[in-house]
Length: 125
Image 1 (cartoon, rainbow, N blue to C red):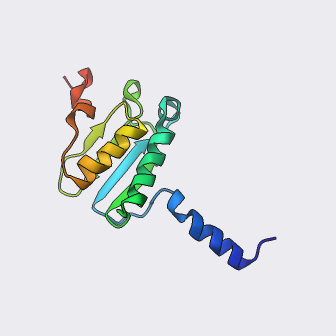
Image 2 (cartoon, rainbow, N blue to C red):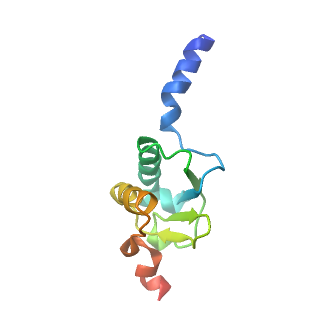
């Protein structure tokens, strides 16, 4: 049996390994984690977003969460970015590498990476 101090130390050590799930912040990153998304590789994408948000100390500004099916399964993994006062951006066919790029260019830099969005696919045309 672990002592309370040991449990608190484990909690502190693991805190940056879990998704930020508060409702605060200006930006919400939502990763589709239904069966279709998980099968297509959404879990590593979710982990990449969580790790990048933590590494860049964006936890007060950015929330990373997961949801069920977003409805465009053929484009999984799908990630939606919600920013206060802006139109939602839907990224498709995401990878952990693309997730890191989205953090750098979109979240930190303010520029949507249009070639990764749903509008660059046939579904939006």
